[in-house]
Length: 201
Image (cartoon, rainbow, N blue to C red; front, side, top):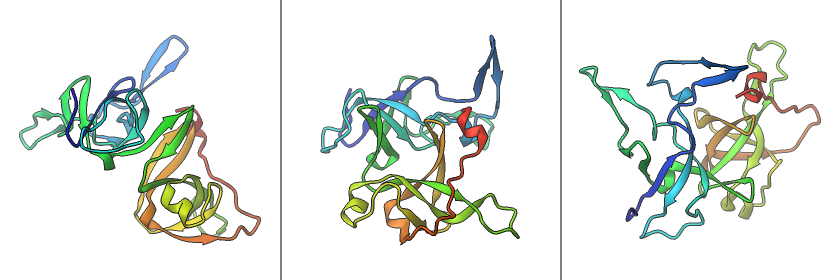
């Protein structure tokens, strides 16, 4: 099965990531099907589009949009699948719904996207734990590389432009490359912010 313009993927494990193993017991963290925070975002590529040239290969592990595997209820209360659903093991996704792919045990940002790790807030009068719209580039696409940026740079990004992901125990924001607005110089007091619960995900 191959799509003309779509990738065909399957969940890496299950559609939802809402349980945790504690000893011999599985603890259910959430039972709401519509809560995107507990929807699995890792998938395996089963086929690539016929009409597109892509660096992503069959068998690659990828990070996808949170709505791909999510179920929801319509106005009649009926449970529905996303538009991507073909069957439980096959989903069709557009190129811009894949944000990162794994190659040689390393995550690579797909074109048009980057991943930023927030830094701790230094504002003693604020209750916010992280500095707004500022972070460290962790995964970078070719466009930002061409602009002279690199992983580890301190950057600013536009408000309301982030989606939260937990990748290998790190809480990162997926940001569109076009929404990276500025490169800052380090002042020496910057500290990356990673909440303790991210390491246990």
